[in-house]
Length: 260
Image 1 (spheres, rainbow, N blue to C red):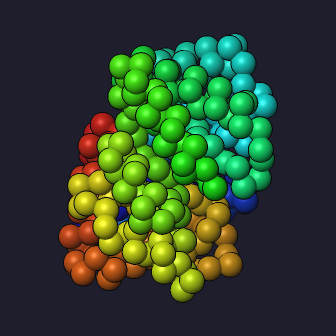
Image 2: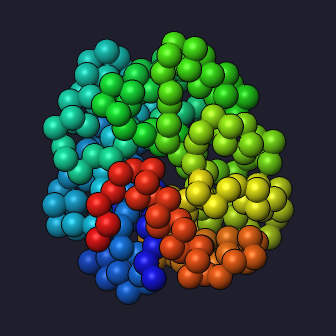
């Protein structure tokens, strides 16, 4: 039995002092593959250096919506180039919309649409961050489809309602759950977790953020994705082994991973 953590940020300074121990713990916990998502292309060289030492780490490159003020055509070309030249890139992102911390919708929309175009051109999935912006994001994705394109990918660290969840499922997206689904006050999200079809379900840590119960309040790390999987298995009435295998196969399909 192995697990795939589909969203990590192990380049952050909080891992610098004990990275080897963190790596050993995720391997001991059965995490066989991970996907590292960029919040800005400027951090990509750092993640490449880590991936060179960690063969189970795949990469995504993109611009987070809260960095959307940096979006330019030059930056778009840089993301395209990095994704095209680096064989370990399996997705564009993370991109999306976040109206909880910022109201610069025009800039965020431009960055999102630009990255959707890059993903389409390179036949890659997108990793999408969405906070307090579900209806606007659905609108943007639907508009992109009217251009004859078919965006695909994952709604990462999902925390939306069942109705919002269904809207993104209808658009063809995978839904990835993080440690939030283990929180006692996350009943609405737990209802969303029950309705996702087996073949669209993914798991992640989004480390170092949002450590799951029973590690809540601590630095999150990839080994803790096991707690997310255990909670989802209980919510969905399946065995941990079956949940782990299903989400592993889904991650392989979503990101075209070579199993290790």
